[in-house]
Length: 117
Length: 111
Image (cartoon, rainbow over all chains, first blue to last red; front, side):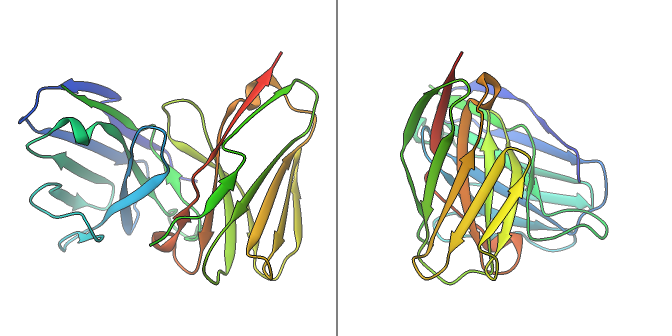
């Protein structure tokens, strides 16, 4: 299994500002995933972060709003830009295993609870 | 992609009782997974059942899969207060990137 550290764990931000969320994994992984979980809802995949190339965004999510960095195989950041109250959600980093581990299941960070005023 | 449905949306039981949650999905799968989320935290993988399996056990967990009905159920036996959490199913058709999460069931186990 992979151990994932995500920070900050929570933040309260003003409308129009940006927040960068960090995700650190204790082992090298090929793909890292960023999810959004709106209040009382299920998880929606925002994008897949690939090392050495641009992130792959899902329908409805764009790079200008959610820029992602992936400088190496153990670290990624997600920025929520020009925030509005509709961005209030839990943001989750996850990986699909490390080394020879299964790539069918996900390991998650503890999440970042974001509130935008 | 469309998300699966889970029912009930919320379930409240007494400690020691069994809890059953159901999940339906829409497309063909090669596996069905269940995750638990404690309030405001990340998800933890519980169990994976493959499309050619009908039932799987892990400790107090029992998962069934009916591919003809595109449905799965998670049974937690002899529940404990610590089982209080949200439970999500996730249908998989290949890599983890292709997981589609259900709407979740909020389970409350009363001491």
